[in-house]
Amino acid sequence: MDFGHVLSMIGILIALWSIPDERIPRLLRKFSQDESVLTGTVVCALLVLAGFWYGPAPVEVDSTTMPVVEESSSETLTRNRNFVFGKTNDHCQGPQDVRWRVPADEGWTIEPDSVEAYALVQSEKSSFYGVTLEPDGGAFQINGRIVNNGNCIRLFGKVIAKDARGSLRVRATYRETRIELP
Image: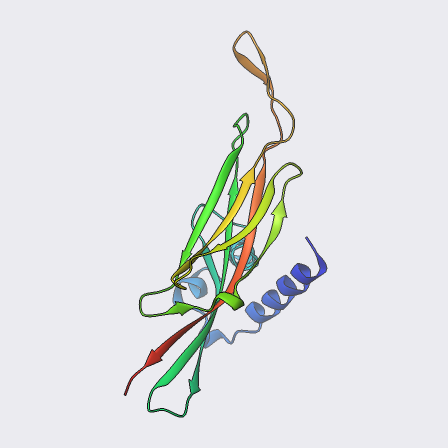
């Protein structure tokens, strides 16, 4: 975990603790008497927001929409998108290629020059290959390979020593645009 992640988690924790009582959801307020439940809820929220609790589906981290006014009678809307994709091999699993396709939302177009992706977590033998753009701006693909470290040792058909699981987690950021006609 780098210093930026630590600062982000501290900021999220401060933001969560500074929410006034009337803004806390009813369910959370119900459990606020039990410190362990509240602490567990905050820890889970931090893990999700920081991107450490990931599954096969992408998690949208941030999305903002900003109107850009042009000289014509149409309006161009622009929004920034930010997703985290991750996968971890099982023990004793062979290498696997991963491809996460990121399509533009319906009616939106991805600006190819805005697409950036980088590995957040990459085990020793795993690889992040980068991004492949579709020519029409309708989608891009994140490519990588997950490889476990070490070997599983079997004796009489039973696993007696396991390898270290391979993993890859990638953050992708990009900008989408849409033209709105009056």
